[in-house]
Length: 294
Image (cartoon, rainbow, N blue to C red; front, side, top):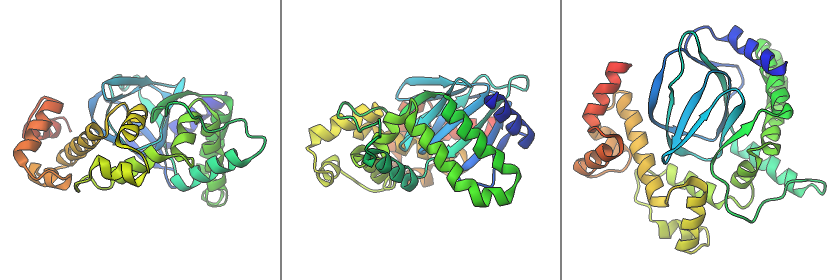
């Protein structure tokens, strides 16, 4: 019943395709009625909950297709391909996008780990992957409903919004994606910190040895932990982030040369070669194709 109410709230709040702000920072509703092939994107730490239709995300060749039975939790900035292959006017994609506030998530993880009765402790095993699918359990569903019910009243949103958002974050940390989220936002979050560092310096030359040294790890240990969490090596990750970010800039109307320089490519010929190898088209061809489908 709670999920049906969530769907009704979203349907009543958004009647055209696109994103709609809810009045609470980081919480948006979305609606898509057109099939969109997977295209380069960068996922930021967020939860994506769908109440109707399906969405697709591809990370390093691994396909994640999810609908109303699972929500997606991304705990680190990741280069992906994302699309809505099954969306149509008869089967619209409806859902909620919720950014994960790093500071609040970290506070909650530390609180959970410091509580004597906490049932979840940080794992010492392999680092869980940064994109996880989780069941809509009762705690998550109820927390999401309570959060969205605030949207119709700005005063309620201003007074209760942050507490309801913390409640939702807590439900995520206790749910199926909790292990991934706790490892990303907890004290031992070396991989998450390295990704944040790399993602903010795409136009700079940063060596893997430099990052490993900052984290107090050997290159081999850092490489292993990074690949466990992202499925990619650090070098592959940086290249994918650069190419995806450039592709998004080109799709937005930026010139090929400006996009290449903006993500750290000095050689336009190298950028074109790597772009074509990744996407099967030259940057110019790809940009033209995006404009035609826009």
